[in-house]
Length: 340
Image (tube, rainbow, N blue to C red):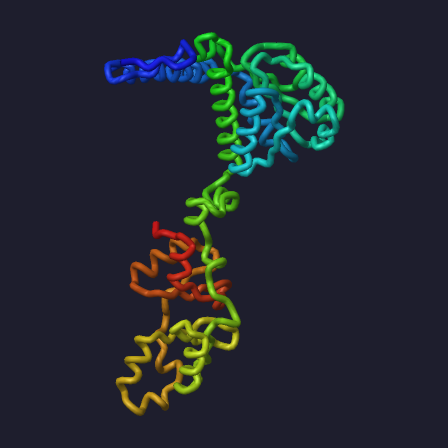
């Protein structure tokens, strides 16, 4: 049984249409193969001057300005997002809005990159002419050697045969290769700028990777919450400090807040086994020397590794050889950090 809709060109499959799913999957594969072929063609016949655009992006002191209309405009906006996430300052400029005041957003030192499948466009032509007059470098990424290629400083004409659309009209393969080439530009430029995991995390603080690259400092407890204890503090005094600060530990420090040792619950239990003599003990007699510590600029995931390895719940955080804070395992887990 087949169900015919109002549109005579659409036939919904019934139970008897066994090959429908297979035929549809084949059609999907055909389209994907056409787009894959288009990408393969760009790889095999990459324009010799492609490196010039990478060089221009590297040398740009300002921002990368992407522009285009229609589907090219959508690709341009996606490339802005890619560049931004990889630490390349950029923004999208709509050609129509540019001609009505927004062109003032582009300044000397920026790099203007126009996207156009045909390599033409009256608005883009006016824009590039105006920008070049002010000393702004202009580039073009196109799939055809149109008039704009002769008006910009860096024309990149990608090899292109046909769209994946059976009518060879809808921007499919052309937008795919333009986007892929733009992604390649962004990745290569960021790599040459030594953009690393830490840099990426700065621009994705709420993402999974950003959390894994979060440093210790934002999660640690700082003064005046820290349970600082002097080496000669009596048992009665340092017990009061540990109780008041509610961290379950005492940090034995010198006058410059350099760490001498740490007093834990275990240290207190061992000291109490000595009986009444414990009341004559000072902090230096009870503390554990050389406790586990971590620098303030190390990764929280590294801190979690240490705490899990040694079955401890707190780490003393140091900066310039002084106590900067205390990191508790609860704060690390609450932040969504996982051990590496």
